[in-house]
Image (cartoon, rainbow, N blue to C red; front, side, top):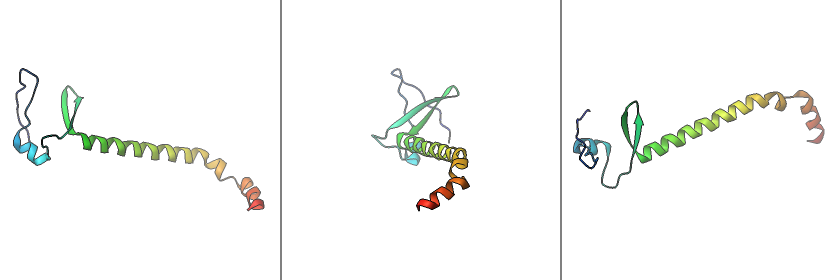
Length: 88
């Protein structure tokens, strides 16, 4: 859906009622404005927070996989396995 709206003298905009209803935007809903490609992207704060948490989780998993691969030679060393068998 595309709508054309006006900006008031105070810099305010009104999100059309149909869009608010479809998106579940009510009084008190917190929105985040993101400047992007010469325009504005408006998202619900809860969606941005969830997206950032998901990205952080993916980044953490990526770092863990990278660390696992880089430490594989140390962890999977047959010589060390023999030493550990003596103590286990």
